[in-house]
Amino acid sequence: MAPTVSQGPGTRPRRRGRWQLLLVVLLLVVPLLEVVIIIAVGRAIGGWQTFFLLLAESMFGAWLVRREGARAWASLQEALTTGTMPSRQLSDAALVMVG
Image (cartoon, rainbow, N blue to C red; front, side):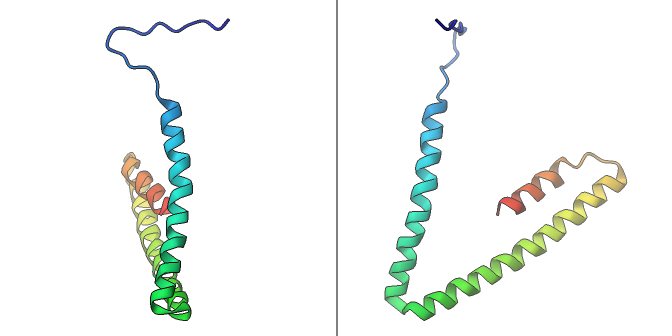
């Protein structure tokens, strides 16, 4: 039998299972919703127009990530050369990479 962990007054039990379930649902629902929207747009404006719209959007996104990544890298290098703690710069770089 596993030992029980005593919780003090005013503490809440962990809800890790609920967050994990929500994350899995979001990771399944969001891509499915994107596909449904792309199909709806394709039916409304045509397949080739939708393809070129997605291509243009992807090119714009790649350009934006490259520009912001370079900006975050320059900011990180500046923080390291001045000897300051680059916490904001690291979080900015991480968010650019996630995007």
